[in-house]
Image (tube, rainbow, N blue to C red):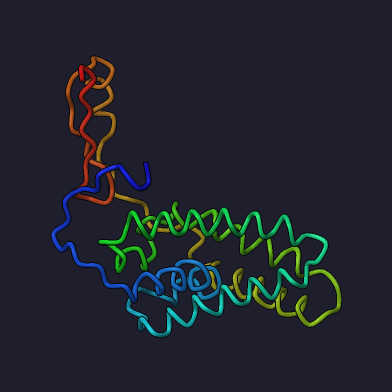
Length: 187
């Protein structure tokens, strides 16, 4: 479905390849460790560098967790698959994906993989443990002011539910604004 389901028509079908490498930096490490301070207005090279540091750092911390390497690499593979799926499906809206509040649900699982790695790495007196603890404190401190992202626009689902229950053809507006889901139960 990720590959074959049609995308909605896009106003600009071009793809800015640099953003493919920038989005993970903004939405994984940027969102976790810099909170609201990393925005889509951050320069692409900085976000690409943040992406590289995140992947290299995750790999280095995984090496520190010798007793859990298999589990971590399975989770990392799943997280990377989800991330690559989002980048593929959102290839025409990459600049929007880099900003908080747009598609956050798509980055939740990969962020949890990073947090799990840090929590597991934080035990003990070693240098990687101190780095992991420092990053966890940074994540907590920078995200306290914004533990919730702004609410999405209420598009009044309650107006469409009775029509869906009656098996009527209906076009339901969804977030982000301007998107919709057409339902044709008879087809």
